[in-house]
Length: 105
Ligand SMILES: [Zn+2]
Image 1 (tube, rainbow, N blue to C red):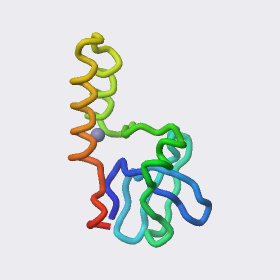
Image 2 (tube, helix red, strand yellow):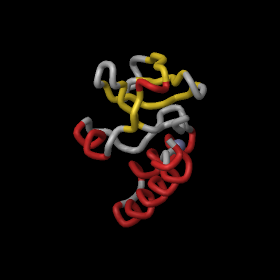
Image 3 (tube, rainbow, N blue to C red):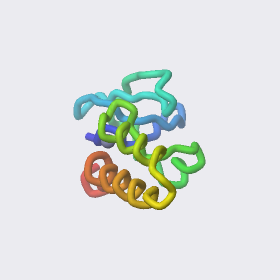
């Protein structure tokens, strides 16, 4: 199972999406802008690469995670001198809460 917030590719349509829930056999996805939700068999997914996320302009952020929302707000509103710290905090949260280690796939 992918962790919530992980960016994956629906290989049937070659479409990048974000994991929002599901089971070990069916995974619930939403489009990166949050406008669409759909369900995909686990076997039809693979983890998006960093290059694919970048090409799609995606940042580590999950709109349904309160921590991500708060951290994004803090990063946006931080004075210039503290933006680096806010970004590091957001990254650390992302790695511990949402990133899917390759080995666990
Ligand atoms: Zn989060």
